[in-house]
Image (cartoon, rainbow, N blue to C red; front, side, top):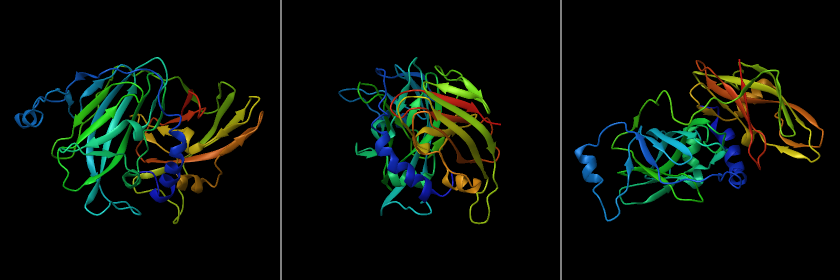
Length: 334
């Protein structure tokens, strides 16, 4: 969805290794519990899930799964066509899983797909989140911090054999304690609508363009929002548009801080769908990103771009203030 996958995604994935050092969440997690089920089991499902010596709770697409400190919904899965610059290995295919996650706690939590999410097939073979699949599906990564009560929607990508059967999505709620959900895919790709309301989701404090927002010793101001059309060489994908945020960041601490637009800035829409930085959009604006070190007392202005659906609405700019601690700012965009 967001621009040329070979540029934006490659930069994001190179930075991901650094980010993983700080994405393991605080808080605890216990065994999950089913809150809402999407449909009763069929006879064939019951046979496939016959009890073993240690029975497991198996969930379905659309089930609302409650952990001790977060809520998970697997909205569906799909086979992903090869990307413009990336194809699956021989005999393999790309699979994307769409998720909603809500932080149902009073403290910040983090999502780290590489640590917390994988697939299994009917032979119990495990498949980890795949970099090439993530590039091909061209969707924002779910990794990052979730504020208390925050909801995020997005996709994770995997590479599996073309003839893989009985796929299941596995979610480890927390890397440090127990709590795991297993979700059956079913035989054919499927997507369901999310519920209108999810327990634990709360409205985030949202600021406006022009507000000077303080979080700790960092000050953020969104100066303006523009929608550059681009040109023949730099233009959004069909059905999309560029959205560029002009912002100012000020470091009021006694120590230098680092700003990474790829790791600290994102966009969400009215459905909590996440969008990452789009380098083509930033180029279309003619601006410069505010990446780098800010000395004590230094102020820096720059532009960050995104690619979003033409008919989208309710966009909110999200800024994770510090890579090494918690704290987020949400700014509603016109």
